[in-house]
Image 1 (cartoon, one colour):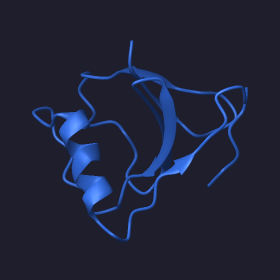
Image 2: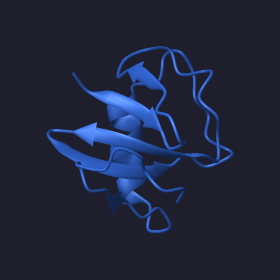
Image 3: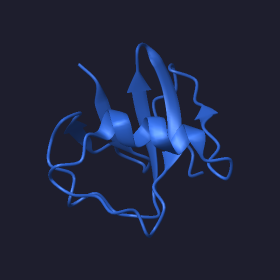
Image 4: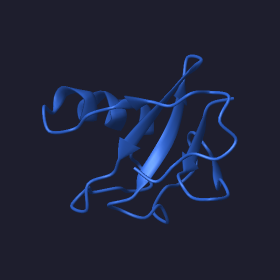
Length: 82
C-alpha cells in the first residue's frame, strides 16, 4: 500500500487516497512510490483539498524546477528533518 509519511521522529501514516486537508503545508514528507521512497516538501501555498489526487499532485511537483525530490534510504527507521 502506498503511504504518505510525515518526516518527524515518529511517522504519521496516511492512506494514499485519504482526505489530506489535515496535512501540514510547508512540511517535509516521505512518499513511497512504486517501491522508491522520496522526500517532498509541500509548499505553504499548496491548495490541498479532499478532491485532490495526491499522485497527480506529486507528478506536478516533479515538473516544478524549484521542487527537488531527495531519495531517502528505505532502511532508515527515522528520517532526518529536511
